[in-house]
Amino acid sequence: MGAVDIAVPQAPLLSRTPMVALLGNPNCGKTALFNRLTGARQKVANYAGVTIERKEGSFSSPAGHGFRVLDLPGAYSLSAHTPDEAITRDVVAGLRAGEQSPDVVVCVVNATNLRLNLRLVLEIKRLGLPMILALNMVDVAKKRGIEIDADRLAQELGMPVVETVAVQAGGEKSLLRALDAMWPLHESAPQPLAAIDAVGVEETQREVRRILALVSSDARDTGNLTEKIDNVVLHPVLGPVILAVLMFLVFQAVFSWANVPMDMIKAGVDGVGTMVKGAMADGLLRSLLVEGILGGAGSVLVFLPQILILFFFILILEDCGYLPRAAFLLDRLMGGVGLSGRAFIPLLSSFACAIPGVMAARTIQNPRDRLVTIMIAPLMTCSARLPVYALIIAAFIPEREVYGFMSLQGLVLFVLYFAGIASAMAVAYVMKRTMGANSKQPLMLELPAYHWPHMQNLALGLWERCKIFLSRVGTIILTLMVLLWFLSSFPGAPEGATHPPIYYSLAGILGRGLEYVFAPIGFNWQICIALVPGLAAREVAVGALGTVYALSQSGEELAQSLTPIIAGSWTLPTALSLLAWYVFAPQCMSTLSVVRRETNSIRYPLMMAGYMFALAYTASFLTYRISLFLIGG
Image 1 (cartoon, rainbow, N blue to C red):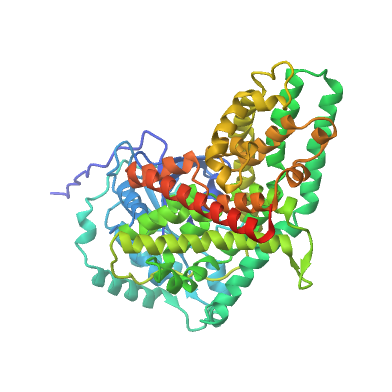
Image 2: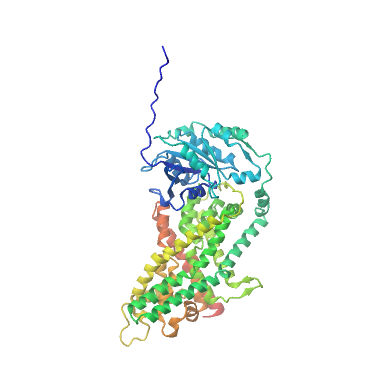
């Protein structure tokens, strides 16, 4: 009797576009690979119920097969310790409602650090999903003399292994070929998460060491240049000095480099305003276009060069691998106020905007440290305050050199940023005492290898920041400027009025009412008007001042820029008081709403708004009164 073939039932073919999940440790190049695959075909949203970013895109393989791709948050293990890792675990395991488990998992690993990366690969493998290992940064590994046998690694892991260089054009082609080789794909479901816990951590690490001994050799490693650089930049004495000098130079450049492009933008806005005045008869529509739109939104747009210069340096420091070192350098200092060095990166993100800083705090494992970081993140000087600082500094601080090489204006800006940092540390120290002290956790943070910043990533980062700023100018700021113009224009001045028309408007009435509250800190009714729309977006305060003062002036004064107008209208104590106010200014509504979602409580955004208002008023009061005593007003 002949052998009988027994047919093994096969899973049905996929009836949808396959979902590919990119997964890996932080700093492995996963997001760069995502950008390389998708180009502009990507969308960013949040996962349902949380504010963790969800990046999805699409691409087509050389064989014409379509794929969807999901860039999962970085994780070191599926035994989640942070909200980011929990999202990655739940998506891969198919535990999120409305979120299908991936049809293919592409595990991206750093070829220069397989020892750390392979643990996650082995954990995911136990879920039984189709997998590809993307051996990224192979160019860096080869330059260092690290040898990896990709074929033997594929044999040991039982999955395809491809070499990728995500930062180079064409660096993703081997991955695309591997995906085509897996076609057609079949329906599959992940094993329960218990499959991961079935093997202990120690046994997993032994397996990692066994595989590394077979597939990798670093005997010809030419010596890690990163270690040589770290001997200097992480030196207990030289390290903090280098960090302070770098930050100081950044703020000097914000003023010295931005002058020419700022003058060009200002001249362009003024030119358009002059054209509109010449082409239109005097009336409400001309007033709306010139004083409302151009006078408001244009006065904010002029500060775009300074914001881009600030982000230019931050992105370079991030891309070259220096920022995690700064976290280690500051770990001891931050530990003294009850934080770990891991809080440094969320706090640094807050220099851009407090919203990503608050969201980045979820990478902090300790719940108390995470909450304190969220509460102090708004004290970092976000880019929305930069237009206000720049306006007041330009009006009241002379443009001259100190000691022959430092810009006095840049020095004042550095002091304001430092004041925000110092106040954040002081508030963290108080919260540590009032929220219950607990033992400081040791800082565990991967230090990526140094490399030259990638110009394409730098350009994309600056373009994204530019789009965000311009979208705010074109939406929130423009809307508020039109609203403020309306409130400042109606009702008109009564017959025989002795003050400018805005004095009798709705905005003027509101400003004079608030003046009773803010007069002790030196604010006039025009400043009080500008503070109100500033609650929606801080940079709106500059545009609001432009609108208010344009409507408050007449004749030649109307044609002059805002800087000389406030220089002639305010005293120096008032200007210093407003600078102190904006060091602590209560948060914008958008940030408070994100704090509400991140903490799942209305208590903490109310606490944040309350303590920041108290700090702002106290700092302004002391600054104003001391300034009056010392220099008069």
